[in-house]
Length: 206
Image (cartoon, rainbow, N blue to C red; front, side, top):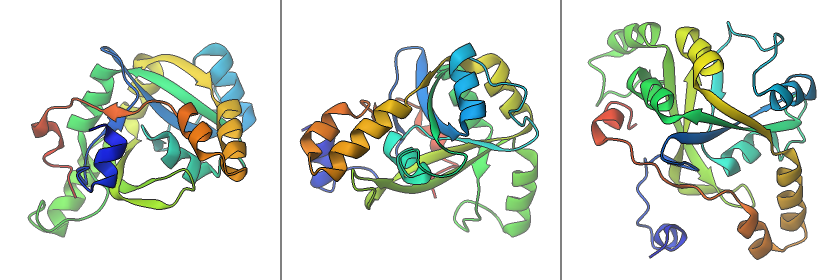
């Protein structure tokens, strides 16, 4: 059974990292204004206009990124980037992350969660995965927020390459609007279950 069939059968785990990945890298998506996005794609690094003192959110799900940026049509999100980063960095962020919201089953109390939030340089939230129409699916998609040393390491150490995938987003969106869902789906990046140790996610499952 392939992953799409598993989802239709209702067997897709609610919390699982799915991503385009190789033995050494994982691809995440972000969307920026053309001023930042095009410069990043051209040089393979974020330009000086990229704010290092702000939390930056990376998303392994292409379709969740499309939901967030409206297929690259929202203001200051017109340039969609596929950022390939090293797996060691991605997993470091997961190990040093906490949930972005309080969960009684995982936290002693709200004070303990707030202390963890202040201490951790990364945050995780799980949002409904999306289909080609950007409707929510029953299972969740990982979002990883990076701040402080995590954001600095992301920008300076983890990036292997940056690609402007705005044309791909535009093409897929056009096919969806034309009702050609099979052709649109064939163009989607292949996102497979990411082999992360269960203990890495144990404290992050909401």
